[in-house]
Image (cartoon, rainbow, N blue to C red; front, side, top):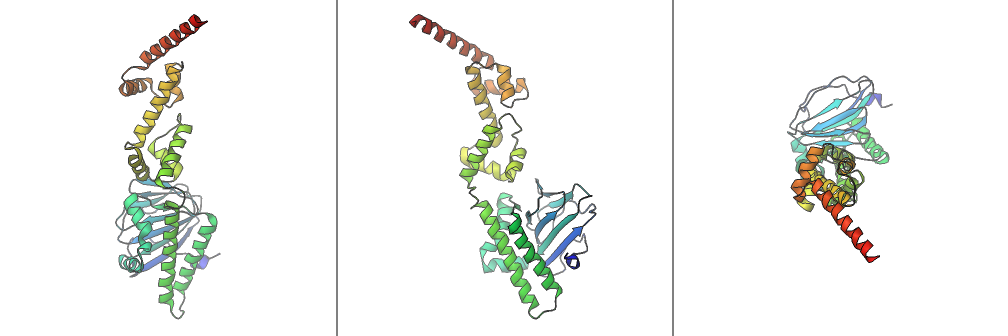
Length: 301
């Protein structure tokens, strides 16, 4: 199926066309490709199949069917295949700076996804199967048209590429704005996730992977909402839960283990810095308060 539309892989990283180039690669036995690199054109990468990971600057993304990767010019990036026994399929669309500039003159909507990649490090758009299949139809049509000798071919190609890029930007806008993920809602979702998984790995990396967002963007959301980093928020939340648990009579070691502190000495230092007293001193105070309350109850009886 579509075998005649596949492209012979070429590790060339410069454009031969003045406006755009589109390739459909289907490697049944993928081999090691180019590593981290950058180029002078815009790249839109559409992932279909394989076990591959994208790296853009310092961000890493495990790719799934329907993912669209956006790489502006001069941005360091690379795709790394992890399993060479799985076929590796993707479309790769390159657009020159001049051609992309022409699109922007038609409307700034064409540049939305690229701007999000540049300003917020949001390089990946996730799509569902039905939506992505519609995009695949557009991609195959562009390749078929490019191979044809039909009247008006050049005009049709420009229109088709513009339509494709506008579709990508609409998807980006829906994902980043209308996906019910405003910053406030995202902040609440992450806080709830932290509450539910307080004893698990809550590093910035793990949370970014869970929400399919960049570390930069999540850090930005926390700074904007509460003025502190995600790491500091998690530490404060864990200390607060430990503090309340010790006051309720839970042992210090249990509290430390139950709320995600792997090392007691680190927990001790952080606790004392946060509350001005040690966990042991708090436990003594809690025990004394409980004893006095029990005496009062007995006296009333």
